[in-house]
Image (cartoon, rainbow, N blue to C red; front, side):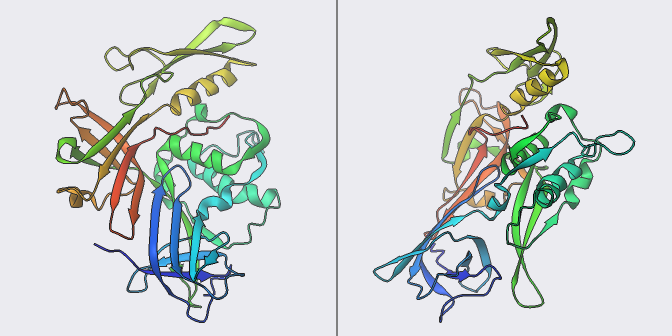
Length: 355
């Protein structure tokens, strides 16, 4: 079924551009991603004026804003404008001085909750570095209140240095099973307002893989055991193990540890620094599988409601054992103007962590 809608270009204040502000989309494709930048491309009838364009909006046939991105530099040739969108979350793709060592007057670290971490990375650190992204946005961190008490000190290395804010955010999202969603609201001035909401991946859906057309990839040859120690005392060691249910434990759990064992040893200036790096090494290897399901298959419509808040409990993961299952998060949802749609579970790509 065709999903053709309308393309609209906006300036940075969300004022629509052009004599005719909505142009029929000849084609478009969208890949939404939980832990990487979205990909969006569109073609439409040529815009007569796009020099002040900041945002591109994909609207449904009824005019509802379906997706928006930074529009880059639209190009027009033979009466057709081509646009390659840039994920709005790219406002956080900034190099800045990031200080995880700040303390309160009483000596406690300022950043010691999940909510405080995201507020720092998505707001405070930009202000402290004098970075003006020239785009107004609001934050919604309310869902992180449910993670009070879930802070993992091992996820963070207490340093102060120049870091990329986006990679730090994606590391935090991966570690705490959350994602950043971009949405838009209409203001009283009848303009759009950009909102970044951090949401938890907390829902699950059992999925029998034999019911769908499935493409699978996996990586078994990743580090799943780490030994850590201080450089000055390499025999005073600690251990972390990545289990086959994607949990990390300090002791070997028979029947749950990943196999075959792939071990790495990490030395740090202190044992605590080595411990943090060891934990992060295993954390980035969680969910190292990728399962793609075509939603145009016979039962594909039963998965249309899945979003990044879901884990798929994939049954029959091992084709030789239909009772086998693996739990993987939704990491990508793709669709285009022709009605093609697919959903991807797992995180086979490389991710960045707080080191």
